[in-house]
Amino acid sequence: MILVKKINHIKIFACDDIHKIGIEIANQIITSINSKPNSVICLTANDIFRQTYECLIKNKKKTNFRFVKFFNSWEVTNINHNFKSSSSYFMANNLYKYIRFNKKNIYFPDVVINHGIYSMYDRFIWSIGGIDLSLIPILEDGTVLYNNSNDINKLTHVITINKKSNINVSIITMGMRTILNSKRIISIIKGKNMLKILKKIIKGGYDENSIFTCLLLHKDVSIYIDNELYGLLNE
Image (cartoon, rainbow, N blue to C red; front, top):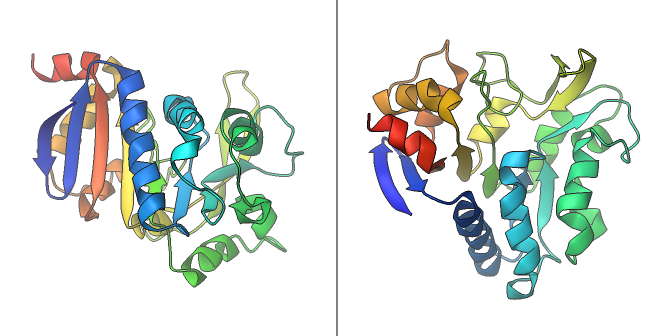
């Protein structure tokens, strides 16, 4: 693991093994929980964090998840939580089934929200002091999580995305305001398709037309990149 760049308060690390990145992030989560047993952690159902969740399971005896509050960053609307494309299904089968925690401390936006008032999710998070650590992906289209708006003050809201099966799916996604209010943000960028995005981050400067650059406004962001992307960056 090497520190490639530091831009503003963003640190970019490169590693030749995606599994090692998962170990590193899992260790940071464990350290956070051990120093603050009632940590508030935001997790994202995304394949890019699968290795991290596997490492948390393997090292579950190194910490106590009982008092941790887990907020999940998105969920499909109006579905059963056993639906395979849901955030809850992914998280249950990649983490929650295998660790000991208080079920009352697992939150999904569709459960917290009542009467279509999506900002209830944000207000609840703020009421307990905000998020200590967020795992948030930057997607290939440059969106942060599923935030396709340039509004960095947007709260939890519903968007419609088009799946590969050409089926439109409505998703409740945490907004940028709550993400940016996290004390720490961790992301992973990998693959040649993310080179343009990485270069724009390294260039520095917030561009309201590129929502991912809002991470440059945050005070503590770590981005991990794979060896392929690191190699392309140096060409």
